[in-house]
Amino acid sequence: MTAHYENLEVEFLYPENWKIVDEETDQWPRGVSVQSPESGYWELQIYPSRVDCAQLSGEALAAMRKEYPDLEAEVVSEDILDLPAAGYNLSFFCLDLLVISQIRSLHMGSRTYLLIRQAESREFKRELLVFDAITQSLLTP
Image (tube, rainbow, N blue to C red; front, top):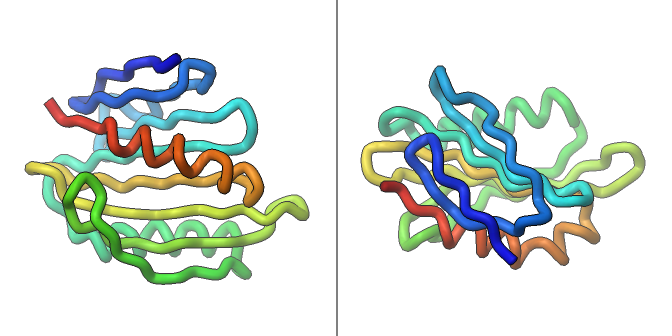
């Protein structure tokens, strides 16, 4: 079964057994994350206007490098919701587990979105379809 999120001027569907967390509702950027019962999460940060996507993804990468200096990063671009998205595929070790993370930024309407999908490597492979389904259900009113 799916649950429906509608807040922060966005809406999307997500698995009902995942936990939703509104990260910031008063200041920009605003954010929401959906956490799987295991280690995975899907996070969306919303910026009030058009911010340079490459710069935004680069800042997110720099923040991750501060936490995990040995992480490996690959520059990627893809279409998300038929819109160009820039970002990185990351891999790093945390508590002896290999973690996979994807950072993407894109413009949708007058907003800029930073999307992060992350999980332990074995879970990431299982949850990638769920992450993609959440992303594909993303709507802006």
